[in-house]
Amino acid sequence: MYLLHGKNITCGYDTVDILSECTVGVKKGKITSIVGPNGAGKSTAMKSIFGLLKIRLGKIFLDNEDITNLLPQERVLKGMGYVPQTNNIFPTLSVQENLEMGAFIQHKDFSDILVYVYDLFPVLKEKRNQQAGELSGGQRQQVAVGRALMTKPKVLMLDEPSAGVSPIVMESLFQKIIEIAQQGTAVLMVEQNAKQALEISDLGFVLNQGKNLYTDTGKALLSNKKVRQAFLGG
Amino acid sequence: MEFLNSFILITNYIIIPGLTYGSQLALGALGITIVYTVLRFSNFAHGEFMSFGTMSTILLTWVFIDSNIKFGTFPTAIIALPFSIIFTIIYCLLVDKFVFKFYRQQKSKSVISLIVSIGVMFFTGGLIRFIIGPGDKNFMDGERFILKAKDFKMLTGLDEGLTIKSTQGVTIILTILLVILLFWFLNKTKTGKSMRAYSDNHELALLSGINPEKIVLITWIITGTLACIAGTLYGLDKSYKPFTYLHLVLPIFAAAIVGGVGNPIGAIIGGFVISFSELLITFAYKKFFFYILPDNFLPDRLLQILSTDYKIAVSFIILVLVLLIKPTGIYKGKIIE
Image (cartoon, rainbow over all chains, first blue to last red; front, top):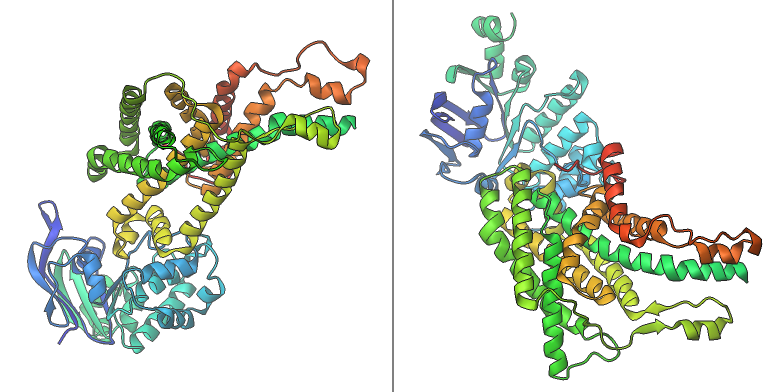
């Protein structure tokens, strides 16, 4: 059973449907990737699941609870964390303040989560009083992920986490994502670098033109000849 | 002795008035900067908000004086201030509810809101003159001086006197307190941080669960408070005339832009840059040189770079220069649209 389940989603902008009857699911403590060519509707799928985009048909469930009509902020309270692809930090706030803003919606004490995030990303602890906008691309991405983790989400959603960072930084970022999943947080991500993403994924959804094309474990997709030829460059 | 005299002269005519006027400009520029960063438009109505605040203070001061309520040797306006702040905040919120909110919901370009704010400026100006009349109002009472020139001369034996008006003292102290309070609020409280976060990145702030309506409310509360205090201090210092506040918008905008729009520290620095340039350029240096130059070197003229009538031109020239040379201002601010 899926922890987060987007069932037969049909949605788009204005009258044009980008997704048609698309299904995406995430299991507890597992990493799930949505891959596919440009314009396949990967980011649209993310946005619609998080509620940034109204869906026309279909349902979204979190822990068997129907969350289709909730606002994004309400979904955060239910246990979803979302890292947008761009503009995902507060540039003039310090690193620590960025993380505090992640916990803004909760009125509980968050010092233990702060410790967890700093343990996960030691470099952020070092630079906690620096303005987030002054950090390098990889460090900013860590701030963005850290901010989303501050509500201790059940599911962490990452929209192109490796966009604009070097391959080495990407590698270490993926390592962190594996660690996050091992701690029990399910991860759903959209990736341009399909090969690397599928290598660390337990489950993969291959989308094309807004439809599910293949759904299988990451390994199986990587060894699937058709998938390789069509999307992974042979 | 001569050197000391010239120093006292400069302190008396430039440093103290400059600090006072600079504080008033800084408070005004802070209001403009905060509206600009959070609500993303240049609020030309800010000068009239200051005027509205001052008008409320004057009306309340009259009420207090009539009912014999006094604040020792301080101006009665100081006890009227907390109440007039509330009136100003209410007025700002009403304007927002009936005018700015509509354009915010339409997601209008900031230039449209700017033009709307000019409309609000004229409306508010008219309303104020309708209520209190266009004439000069002096509402300063209580002890006028902290230090009198005569006492200073007696005390030091110098030729040159130093006066500190009580309005100058009140302005500088109140500004320091207010700025400390504002920075504490923005940097240390959860609400203040969320306000900065909202101005940094609207979308992400929404995702983080920050309520934009609450941010807008707090923005107007701060703006109204700053406008009312800045206006009242200016009025106490120089006497109140509604039309003066129409002109005051220019040096205040110049201050905000010179300092770097969107940067509170910049707004404060900008305020002092403008006030000191205005004073330094329009000051008659004759007496200053009288003290430091030998007698036969002294020229006949006043040694004034520009007549005081050109005061407003000074801030305008600085504004144009900054926009041409360094549009981001002293502290890297946003480029105003």
